[in-house]
Amino acid sequence: MTKRVYNFSPGPSMLPLVVLEAAQRDLVALPDAGMSILEISHRSKWFDQILQETEANLRQLLQIPNNYHVLFLQGGATTQFSMLAMNLLRGKNQPADYIVTGTWGTKAVKEAQREGEVRVIWNGKADNYNRVPQNSELNVDSQAAYIHFTSNETIQGVEFPTEPETGNIPLVCDMSSDFLSRPININRYGLIYAGAQKNAGPAGATVVIIRDDLMQAAPNDLHTMLDYRIHAAEKSCYNTPPVFSIYLIGLVTRWLLNDIGGLEAMATLNREKANLLYDAIDQSNGFYKGHARPESRSMMNVTFTLPNADLEKQLIKEAEARGLYELKGHRSVGGLRASIYNAMPRDGLVALRDFMLEFQARQA
Image 1: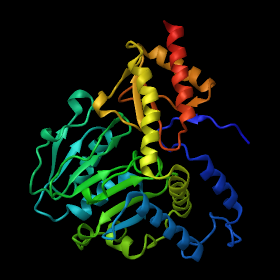
Image 2: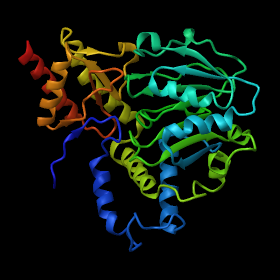
Image 3: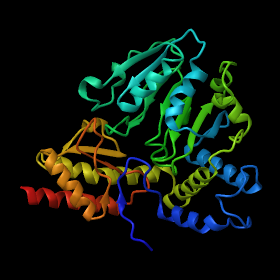
Image 4: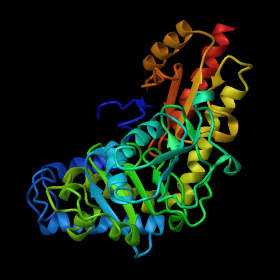
């Protein structure tokens, strides 16, 4: 088999090897189908079984009650910036409150403003988005239609350790980059959306989990493909869904349940992996400097800088020679970023940590 490197890309990201191997086996022909997963109809009994299992696995992992719908859509989280506002804000004489902790929250505000009044109740821009707010800093409007936040900002590497307190106001979350990385209290949320390509599967599918009462209160002037009610009624098959991506999400959820042991176990492993890097950063005497404040650090995206840009370029080049790929940080933050989603094995973090310590020692 071709040697695999450790891929620290922010997305599309690594997939579990057992998932890739299962997909490889089914690529030519699904068991009992006689045709590839790439060829089966979305109206076939085989895909219906895949869809049912994938939803059931998600419901088990996240303990999703029956009054929530699980939808498999297309267009990524970026489409959801608009779609959720169309369904939850359009035509209402209420504002939507947004908490902005980085790049993706900023983009979500821009799209929502097309549909109604948007209030930014906290913005971390002044500190270059290096932390998330305390509940006491949030100026929540008690009449808000919903409160939106991004649970993990991929670019800046900041993550909410727990949900913000919103009282009875529906909480809406872009959970793209820490979806399925830890348990959540689903009853705290009105709507969750997540692009699959970080933790749940390959690019091409977006998971939306929406409470029924919010979905039913949507306006009646929505375009068909932008109406959650249509997708719920048609079991995510109003049009041709991303069959292969949903199939792989099903395999990933099966891996989380059967191989990992659920989201509590996954969260424990993710904390252990992240701490390997954060400890190396904290103990480097300033050679490595983390972007996020310690209390807001992401378990998924570790962002840090070196003393100068030349050293950063050198580290990235040498890392690739060691099989450690995609460590360059986003241009808005600079430095390096190690994205360590669920499928990144602990051995990958040990390899990166050891290389970082060695690199520092050689530069001393």
